Picture 1 (spheres, rainbow, N blue to C red):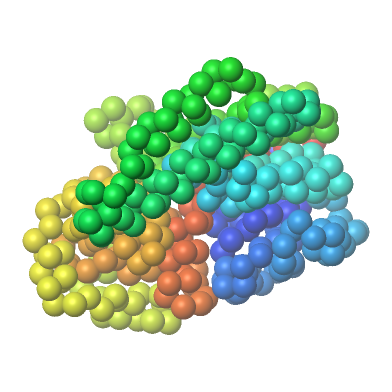
Picture 2 (cartoon, one colour):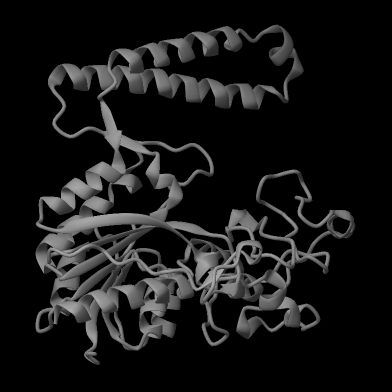
Length: 399
């Protein structure tokens, strides 16, 4: 078995969860990373002092140039990372025309230039169902697509208007003809899609085709972080592509549902196992263990909220996590993060970081709200390690 280290570039690196996971294998040197948002880049630099951090918008030529310069005298063996997921997430309205959903093209361009032997691209599970404008549309098809966009935009604006008007009973009850228009718009949109079914295609097909045109053989799979020792159920789509004609090797679960335990695996890690020792610990700001100050009436509400439910009735925000199973997906949720199963408060950033499988020596930079965003957007390092180990085996087989 080879003990060589492989050189890595991490794109859309965030605070560095994926880099952290690859480094945990002991077989990868993350030479350079790119991140647009300064608080996340600050965190990355603090925890990865040996990596060249290239800050800035990767769509700009000068930023790409700085990335290429970092590999001027080095071979880039692997490119990892994932475009921002906001355009693909199942949470909220998914806009196929959101420019953040096109950033994979910049990832593809950098792969084309550096020609790594292998790449890993990750994203949220919602990527599997999102569609983009099909490449190579005719002028007539483009006109029909624009008409469809107009209808969908009008429907979205009408839905937002109705939401605002709920606070104005006079308009909502007596001066609102939007329900009829909404019905009409829905029918027009459905009829238009039936008449022109090929204006869009799955973004996964576009991604695979883009890499295939570069000579890469790419495959993807949905991986659940809980299956790799992360105390959280968090599904991510992982693309692995290689220049050589070999199939992608995805990691095999090391942990499984205890009710369906597979021989050779361990039970899923639970919330209690991950954070219980912190429940009586006082604040420690330098360690990102800081409490949110709730109003007394809200503290009472949190205390009375049953485990497994949201204090405010949301699907995710202010959800009181069950302690003896893996956590729900950790999200930033604008401060409405997960509620502690015993203490009447939301979890601290450090507790959430543990649910994401970050080590206690990993310190986050920025304000508390900025830290919560970084944690919520991160790839769990233990998932990154599992993928890194599989990638390492592939590379070793080619040497």
